[in-house]
Image 1 (cartoon, rainbow, N blue to C red):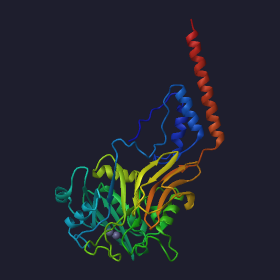
Image 2: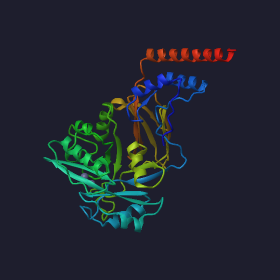
Image 3: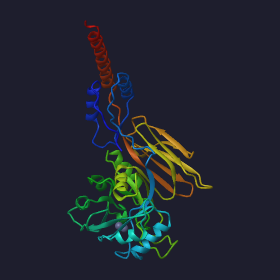
Image 4: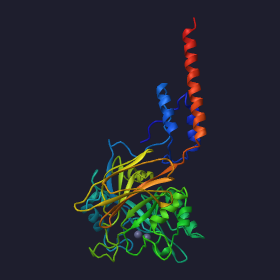
Length: 397
Ligand SMILES: [Zn+2]
Ligand SMILES: [Zn+2]
């Protein structure tokens, strides 16, 4: 959904400089009033300006929201129900997609989609929970839409085991997400931060023994997330069920369904479209809060909660170090990016404990003002010179 990037003649030098300071990830945002002046100058000179920060919010046309769960087990590993029963539960509870992720087993989904799948209504995606260990640590990584079964890769440290499995999932054309870091206190913040080529982790997992909130000196997963983002590593937080037990509805002590999910904005209900949106951060994670609008751009983050009867809400915008940048008690909340936040993410707290997590955007600090002033002066002089040159050409006999 990127807009075409054109290389202007006049602001070329500025554009080149912008490309230099921007990392490859288009989600990194640099805000600068001088940039806006440059845009205006360029527009005035009838030259298109280079687009250097792609807003994450996409136009509503052709895009839809799809609710899904990316972590569920069947009788093919340690679940208590057949794939058919598991898929049926999600289809009947208004989910739009489900990834089946048995431990070290790739459950076939073709027959399930013949039975339950329907265009733009419901989709089953194949997947696997690559289940590995290091000493007493349980290291589980989901491979979404892997082309083949991925064997646990092992390794000589927690980080190496994680990295080798992430790499193997990528080689199998799958999308990795790191599961329940605090399960058996297995993956600390420093380890999670070192894994490369992985964009997603479970900030919430509905299994009753995964220690989402931390304890005994180990940080909760949101706290770990803020530390990782503060170190400049971009991770997106997903919420999942990790459902195993469908035959004991209402029992909070088993891993039942319907506890955590993602709502993904994508052009169509198709595996790659959904997974690309997930890896781009164009989704929110939820344990019961529903949004009716989400708009994230270089300038601001805007959220509209769809309120449930009798519930009340707090919308919090969070920056570097987990700093609370702003809190709103209205269901419509907006935060204007100033440029010094490091990153901006948001969360919605509902009065009965339900939550939603909006994905972070990284914010680059403004460049030193003297650089901007120098470039602006250069641009003004260049425009003036060009206008004079054109006048001279025109007046030439
Ligand atoms: Zn697991
Ligand atoms: Zn699991």
